Image (cartoon, rainbow, N blue to C red; front, side, top):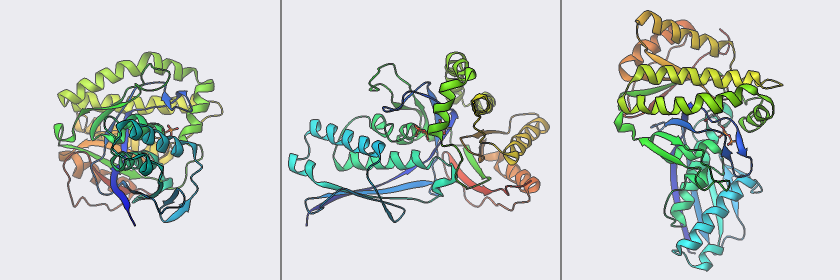
Length: 345
Ligand code: DP6
């Protein structure tokens, strides 16, 4: 039987200027521009195989080995946008476009850990579908329909997501600022504080912030545009000091917005704050900026740092949190190491 299939792998991305809030829930158009580093690693990836065949009796999907229902509107939006683009590209016959699709996706990191699993998952799915249906051009605009932050995982290196001005979202796309090779010394350490499911999802947390956080309005109008331009310059110049300061300030402001939300969204815990304090202490005693922390909608810390400082920072983390992580392997680009930190100090 004729089956056409494609398998892709996509990594997670870690935002340094956070996306928080939408102007359109259905089209997933963000309130503000955002910027992230796409991790260059085998440790934190989604892997997806998509297949079409005249013999498939219905669309089906498996996530980490378990069959899931396909009635998720975000998933359906991604599939139908790919098919629309495929129809205009005209590289598949109308008959092939009618065939049912099977999707098989797996993550090699805990789905619930708040570690951007949906970003990698949707980026991977959309990229695989785009290859299968032979569509050209930017597909970040389609990945965005799955999960906003997924659009940034379509590209490697440092990537910006431009909010766009078009109400139909056609200009709300991700663009690479520089490839990972531009700053090959850059590293990311992920300190896994907890892998339990977050209490408030990003989707509902940001909805609530939009409803009632005054600080979010100030952030979007005044802070993010300036930070986007400053951090982009810092990345182009490889100015770690400025990059790190803006990264930490933006993470802190994002969590301040979460606390300014009523009822508040509390994502960081005591260990998360302990790690932030440790980074400030290391930076102070080194007399320079050695590392930057950033936290998404969860307690896990993501540290951006340069390769030469990885052993020292790991040693400090191991000492303070009584862990025993050794750095055995280096990757080029934004490599990542997972460090398990006990949830209790
Ligand atoms: C805190 O992309 O998960 O990680 O678009 O509703 O699916 P939806 O939200 P999602 O939000 C990510 C928020 C964040 C910041 C970021 O990655 O920029």
